[in-house]
Length: 298
Image (cartoon, rainbow, N blue to C red; front, side, top):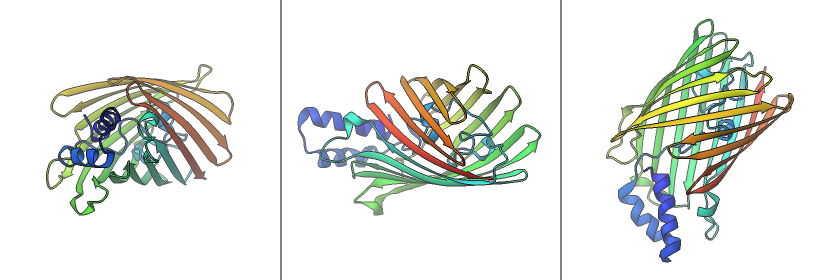
């Protein structure tokens, strides 16, 4: 169980036992920090509404700055994206405390090369926080085939004990093949480059493959399968659909297994700016809300 999920369950236990919230969570977080991740337990940004199952290399999905650079294949040259997420409504309504994340990033594309960079900050009940920096460099290898490498740095710990925070550096590799009917992606993530000074925030090695259909009269569909290896192998599958009413409005939804969750999203495009509002529901932990604003320049 990840630190975020474990922390939410601890908070629920508090409500049942009436223990002091801050001391209770702090006492449990110190020895159990593990597998923290700024994109866990679901995708952020535009992809939150479909859990990453909709991928159009020429659209907002491909240019998200916290995703691999190889997923972008449009003629626009640069852009910025900001994202905010409010996690698990039933769990964070105690005395104004919250569980949330903000992210800011940008991208630049010229000729065959694409570069992306992003920063994300996660805060849980003002007790635990994560800071994550992401950088990806990609290029078009041949027509309709792109690849990229990703470097991610993660720093996590208790908010009031920043001197004891743990840090880790890891990399990933990704590729995208696309054509007139759809696209296929493959990525391998969390390959360690610099391990934390002690065990705690190590992320499990993971591999993911996605199959995405182009937009047609039925919309766009996508299937993403992910395998992670920690103590045991774990498999997760997500299936999604997006329908464009016109060039201004699109609606999407997705369902994921292991654990079961479902997602909804609405995207509004006005000129060079695009806004996305997303909802994600975990059967035990409740609803999360996300808002993303994207600006792209030719």
